[in-house]
Image (tube, rainbow, N blue to C red):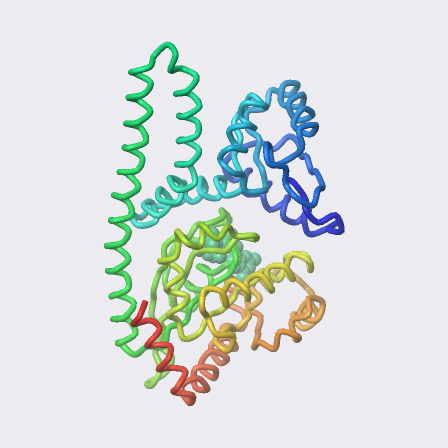
Length: 374
Ligand SMILES: Nc1nc2c(ncn2[C@@H]2O[C@H](COP(=O)(O)OP(=O)(O)OP(=O)(O)O)[C@@H](O)[C@H]2O)c(=O)[nH]1
Ligand SMILES: [Mg+2]
């Protein structure tokens, strides 16, 4: 990791630990860690060349197969690093995509992952192929040239094909979202960081049995299920893809489709693990709210929900105070999805909030218009 804020003594630690967890999910054993502090990344290797030498020695000594960067690398940096270190090099973004890829079971998710991956790797392939081409051309001029150009063409063609498929699926999905809205059930979206217990809560509230696991990104594509409240009210709950700290904007972009569910919802629950250490929780809270706002969710549609209260003796009020929850001015509650604690309390807040929103019909119309415009 290149740490760009010299005054940061704790947050970077949380981020590195998070990366470690993600890497380990892939079955990769983490044997060492390097952190360099500098205001700006270096152009050639992202980190300094002295650090690269140090890394190289480490890689050789321990027979390292893979170096993972927390920072997002440019294609040229990735190429330079692979050459200088003599082993494979990936960044946080690629790690996330790899996990997504392993977890994806549906067509649309797979397509989106492939699109994201191609977008990230195309410049790298091009650069790599061009370096190879220019090195080899003295000997294999015609062949190298052919391979180089045909590879690039194939890459571009593949990207275009995938983009077209995604476009079609997006259209379909928008139509489905509209149809769902027309049914008239209020949409309640469960959002939050991976592993927060979104699917567990979704199941607990609706009686569904969707897959739950401690693996990150168990859920990639949204799931929908109704919950009958009373003769007047039936809610439609949506389970969504998890966030990750320092989410790469490109990842948001490639999973835009899933985010439409969040955007189109009447209410969005931001689920947080009450068992996270206070600083982690604070980061997730502020980043979660920021992400939702960026996606286009008005603040008055957000409800903060602490989950897993069965695992801690700390009262939620105390935890809330510790992380400055009150300052946000958002409604909040605490539950255990697994032990089904306070689900009625949560449903009560949801229905009350929906009533308030219904009494402000103007916002509702704006919302519908926004969805219609896509
Ligand atoms: N003790 C406890 N464990 C919980 C609770 N809710 C969820 N879990 C556990 O937390 C883990 C993650 O749960 P999921 O429901 O899959 O979480 P998710 O947010 O859907 O995760 P992704 O789909 O990967 O983003 C599982 O091992 C659950 O059993 C809870 O209230 N209490
Ligand atoms: Mg899930």
